[in-house]
Image 1: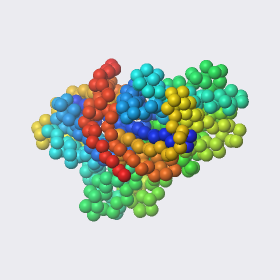
Image 2: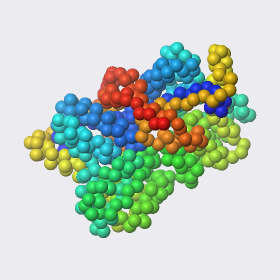
Image 3: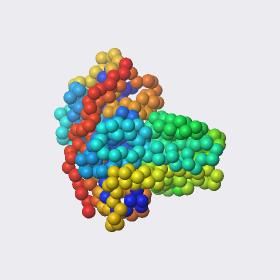
Image 4: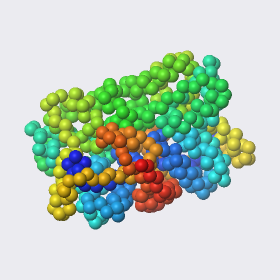
Length: 255
Length: 255
């Protein structure tokens, strides 16, 4: 998005107090994401990118219904990108447990007639955050998760989590040169551009947009991991606790 | 605790909405833990066991000052257990990043004259929660984390995280029969018994205490992981959102 839309201001909201989302319940992810979307709308955002596959998989519909601004998810752009490059119609999906269990990718791909093999990869996020994406241990873990996809003879694999591009070289080495790895980042940036255009709100007059990062916890590994992703140190980080009060105290008993 | 104090009622509070704590900031862990302690005191608990090394390492003092009930941590019992078994005075500590960075074990052991080698093991919790503690991948990860401890010729290693007993056989195989692995569970149970005795509130008249599990998110892997730890399915699980409103909205800017 930064490369594709250099003049736009970007307001990033990272719920570092609750991450990882990929192993939380869909209901928890929905409630948190809605509170964060409301915060960003109050910040004056003209468009919300739900740049998390887990949140897109379980919360996108509710966000679109509830927020007064445009909402772009990452699942549909990933599906479009995969359908555009597959030749044999056999597509693999890697994601967090909550994303895979939601079935969002599987439904969208199957509706387009693709054969889908989905695999939850709960250890990829911690391995990437530990900075081990290029190590032998990451290769062993990846080989395990990729085995069913290789057996299903997929020719395209969707990286269904925003962390996974970091581990892409390891995945590419295991899958070989004939398998295309698709991440939704470029397609999401293009969709965002289209949305802003259709609203007549695209900033394309040159200049460089500002960036601000809101975090719900500033003590962890975010600064290091985000710099590794963005290729540059972050300038403005603000800690905030929006979202937490959106949780109800309804309790749920099971016998 | 269940084995040592079979007649006591146990009220468990698991902050599954915010786990893992081991990579959160100390301030966040302190605020959450205090809110949970207040909840358990309101539930009528006569004694609070802070059964998390990260919370014990950074929040124990504040809990003892703020709560109207007795508070038992896991760090001091672990230190006592390690000092009781070491022969060469060289002790290793394994823990989450936040526990190790806090220096709580290192200070306590060094004050007793021990030579300490501490190692953060951020991948152990996700590997254990994935159910891979016995696999080759866990052995590779453990071999990496244990290398500096082996080089330091420690004869005792503290398992400084309540998850780690699950990976104990893997650690024992790498460290060999001459290294003692210490986890604080037994010592914590004994300290709790002493505290209850000194208050004149020990239930030792026989019978079986009840158990209830409060969770802030019930959708994840808790039920499976907890059953693996306890060796039996859980009966009463209640979802609750206490703790979240204790977060302030004070924001912290960095240039």
